Length: 238
Ligand SMILES: Nc1nc2c(c(=O)[nH]1)N[C@H]1C(S)=C(S)[C@@H](COP(=O)(O)O)O[C@H]1N2
Ligand SMILES: [Mo]
Image (cartoon, rainbow, N blue to C red; front, side):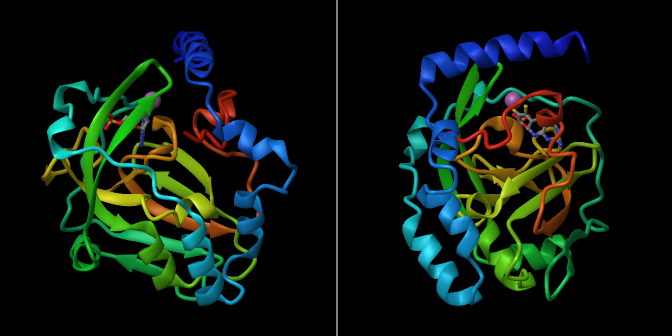
C-alpha cells in the first residue's frame, strides 16, 4: 500500500497540470462566496423549494453518444479485495440526520426511475474512459429519506472497507447516480455490483463501488475518505 501512494501523488500532480482542473479553485476561490457552496448552505429549507432551486442552478455536463463508449478503457481499480455481495440479501442502508432512515432492497431501487448517461470516468492515475452508466439519481434517494435542514455532507461506506464523503450539492446533481448498469449490462462485481456511485463531476476515487451505507451529516468527521485521508484532494471536482 505505502509503495503505491507516491506514484499516485506524482501522477495526480501531472494530471492537474495537464487538465487545469477547475473544481478545486472553484471551491477555494471565494471562501463560501461561490455558487456551489452558497447552495450547500441553503438547501432543504424548505426541502422542496430550495431543492428545485439548487437543481436548476446545476448545469448538466455534456454527455457523449453511445458510439463513443470505450469499453476496454475502464480499468478495474480496487485498493483491496472484491467483496461478493448476494444481491438478494443486499440492503442499502440510508441513515444519519434524516427524517426517514431506510433500508432498500435492489428491487426497491430498481423500481425508481432509471437514468442512463454516457460520461468520462477520470482516474488520477492517468487513465480515463468513456462509459455508459445506468441507475437511480441519488437525488431521488435523498428525497425519499428527507434530510434535516442542517445536512451538508454525505458519507458512503463500501463493503471492501472503502469510505468517501461528498458535499450535498454534488450528491443531488442530476448526473450523480447510484449505478447498477454499465454499458447497457448489469454492473459487474469488479465494477462495484450491486451498487456504485457514478458522476461526471468527480474524479474516479470519489466514485465508490459496493456502496452499502449512505449517511447524511451536518459536519465532516476526521476521516473524510480512503485516499483523502492520505493527502488527496477532498472536493476532487472535474
Ligand atoms: N469501494 C471502492 N470503490 C472504489 C475504489 C476502491 O478501491 N474501492 N477505487 C476507486 C478508484 S481510484 C477508481 S478510478 C474507480 C474505478 O472504478 P472501476 O474499477 O469500476 O473502473 O473506483 C473507485 N471506487
Ligand atoms: Mo482512480
